[in-house]
Image 1 (cartoon, rainbow, N blue to C red):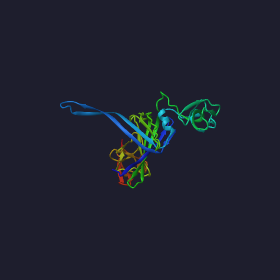
Image 2 (cartoon, rainbow, N blue to C red; image 1 turned 90 degrees about the horizontal axis):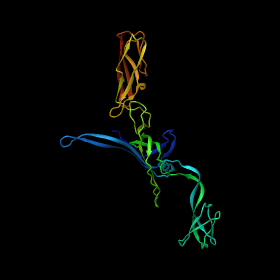
Image 3 (cartoon, helix red, strand yellow; image 1 turned 90 degrees about the vertical axis):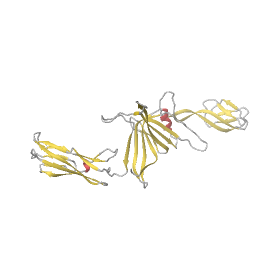
Image 4 (tube, helix red, strand yellow; image 1 turned 180 degrees about the vertical axis):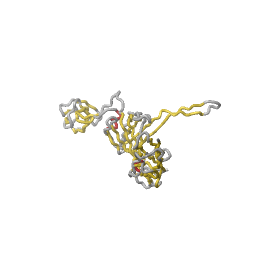
Length: 344
């Protein structure tokens, strides 16, 4: 196993799932978590009811992000709505020192003003513009509460609108045991359904944290060989070095050319680097060198393309061998061969 470590928290990029236009970029996360879960059904039968098979189903991919900074977008995503800017009604509180019961509010109230007096009594007064008169207020300090009109951002949390579905990408650092960043881990969820669960907790001795939680929705594949998926995980190397391979395999192992079909004719050799374990093979054809190591000069091969051509002088029964060579920084020089055959 490699001595690499996934460190700290992930940054989060939230985008529109249709246009991929960025909505928010979260870089002040306190925690970030991705959870893959499945349900299971046991199949049992026979004497003593032994376990015959476990059917695993209902796979889910859940993500939770908690931010230290306050972001309007997180509340908007949970509400499934947009933040609009315009002239809105808001609540204002003023501290006013009355003069013979009269005072002036900081803004123009749009309705009555509620006044809290120092003795705990409450009055409702009707303003004239910004001016108020408080019965028995004298020269006391009072608190005035009222509605007023202001230009501001506003979000409406509707009763039936569902939370947003977005494209979510988590970006985290993978460091080696010297502390150097070796790779960047990216987890992309093309359709992330926000749960709509939101808690705004305020504390006298701290700041509010915001959480964005949700579940991946399935996305149709773009080819016929793979099924629907929830997310794609990518490891992006910091350096541009090639992926390490332990061996190579040239495909196909032999190429047959028919003289009757007409010559010259060309066929392609592809070379794959073998990585082992759960790693898929990687195509290293363009990084290989190809040489005709036996056979007549009627055969030719592209030095770095792997394209083999049987020239017009090739006759039935002619044989040849092409050797492909690939250099790996760890495994050294790796080779494999392809046989060439000309038939009638």
